[in-house]
Length: 518
DNA sequence: CCCCCCCC
Image (cartoon, rainbow, N blue to C red; front, side, top):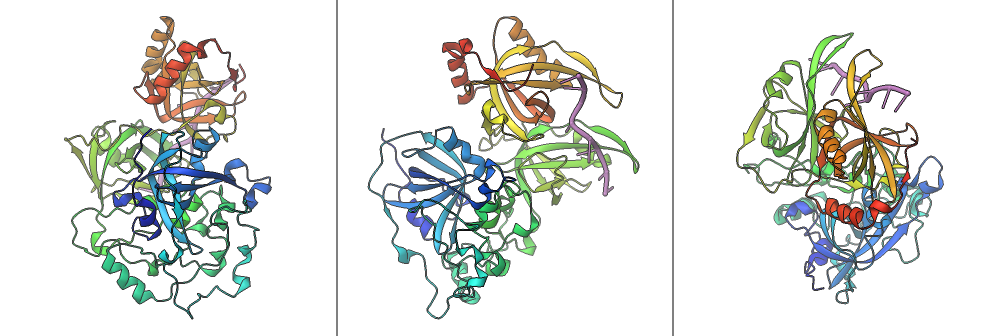
């Protein structure tokens, strides 16, 4: 099949001219090698399979370059989809120079073709492209072994001999703040190739790629940006630029991805530009909930936003502010939102992969966009196979798509606190050969639940996509809805169509193994 | 400041 790779993309990445997808390019590249990386942490019992890492070598047909797959995308490899020959579009990536090597950190990607013949004869980009420190400026770490305990494979990559980037050379410290700064100002970019990662000494070994070994650790502050911000020139040298400054992506996946947190350069926002505005679609909306605790009564509601870059963030408002905005917020609509406060995500109530959360105040501005922005998807899914749920922790949040093979009538359930709610049980089955029990709670029972029941009673086995389902440990593993879950019946997605085809052709007659005990 | 995801 003829497929155009993005010509010159690798060279640009290596030169630092294409550092991340927000520069407008989502390069189409071919995977020419996939390697599993064995990390130190994998040998520790406390850290499970989440520390598996995959290195890939990417090609634009002319040049090749190593990259690393964010762990939340490991399933691309595990499912056998991403392989040698795959053609991919990098939809979210960060290029960074680490240990004197340029590395492409693949945070998200589209798989365009699972396997294709190798295109061209790509060669590694010639070394001198990466600007070297001048002689006599070896960096404070060089030659000081104590600063680099991780320069042995311990704590680092113990990967296969030819794995790109395996060398654990110490990083250089930028030789000249002034020159780096002015150079970057000239280029208008926030990080040019001669701005090496300025890791604090103690973290230089645990930095990249040693930090790989620490994957899976959740939200540890000590990993927050090992770079010195002082070395990062501003993103916008023109402070008068009217557009909102885009500063969110570096933290987008930080809670799940130490590697991304380490490597995504901070977007420096001019003080004069602190009045951000986001344009995003509401993808989920919780109930307006009243609560009563020792501190008094109150009410709260939350909703999720998704923007055209694939960023997602939760917005929460309390009390009078909740009343102010609750009726205005509609799922599916696009809004301009500004003057909210950005604070650390309340993980107990926030299930999005973002360390930040927006809290609206009475002075916040929520403005509907009447021209629907088609560049913002209606929903963003990260579907996992049902078989994957077996390995997920209690309370994990996941997106699942499957065929409804059974649904129970709605029943009234008394909560432990004495209040009542509705419940339905259904079973989902997918191509992984597994099935799982899904509990619908509250309104889901009468809305989507009733439609599903009607279809089921008519002898149909509808496709159901679950966005933001919650994994629980009851009876093996099962799933439940939470207030911000979304259900989609017979959705018009490729995944739904292939499931339908699979089920009609063979899946219907293949007994599946339930991961829930009935 | 402020919600704790429901049941067998």
